Image (cartoon, rainbow, N blue to C red; front, side):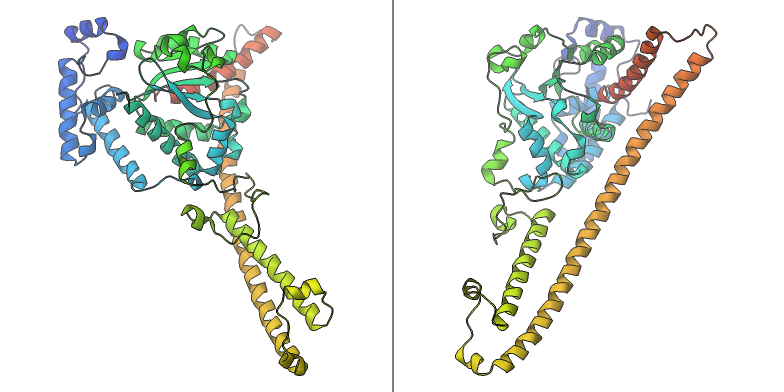
Length: 459
């Protein structure tokens, strides 16, 4: 243990006795600190001020980092320092719809929303993982920006009632492995455990597959009481939820009396109040059909934000089509083959031009040749830009495939180890249907334990 690590000594009988009588939820909070914990808090405060991180000099905030690292001051200080560095990239950033269009599509689909408060004043977040599809995430940047925006807004709602945490209801209905991505799960959990410690008040997992219940029965005895009281894996019983959330604040689907909360909740709706959503949320990167191609008003004029690549490409294609059409009409007019409707779109030739038709024709031919060269040159630039974007997309997909391949290799290695164990066991018997089922069940348990190992660090 380092010089700065101030923690509760294992042999401190007074501290142990005091903690034994304490409500697990009160551990590490103001009014319930031991002498050693008080000393750790003051030491951490001293270091924070010396580092010039005055924004962290608040008792409740400091105690969150103390609890997250079991009152080890060196680790708590490292955690604060890393968060301060991470937060610098968001300073002065105004979150807009264009920051995360694909994530807002998930929001409209009902993947995540907030509605109501629990009995302690914490906001209640509803999450439905079965509606989330990793392949439709625009980019990791979108995911991070949306996570930061939503969590910060959610915690501001909690602060209105003097709380620092929130309650979550996770509905696993319809969930399968197509809704799961290990790289995305790792990214989100890394953000939550490193930069939002001690923020989860209660979590209720409903409609959970049998695997979740089985994993919980195995893992829960290894957890401390404070962590166990936060997590509830439920089948049909909704009484534990009503113990924490009043019926008039809880959706009917989960045992309450409240109607379904809107997908565009009190966190997301303000984004739409300040700007209109750009219609570029097609996951293939194409514009929606209802965007008028003839519109010359840029997204930057409407929203005050840069145009997205798909908007720019749509405008380029529209401009090229319009220019090509006018070019062909000009040729027809010069050849005397244009119709009245076509000639209306072009300025009529003056009598002077008609009198010197040969000269005008030669001049126009020269202009057409120059215009054709310029148009072709622009087309090449556009094609090159599209090629660069395609190469970038392929590189991104390759990286994702590599991550998935690594996960498959890890799981394959685990399966091989289990197979070898079964094969070389002294009491090996021929695999009956029951043994086969237990074999596959063991694989699922190992996989779930890997996920749980990451999640438990956040609680």
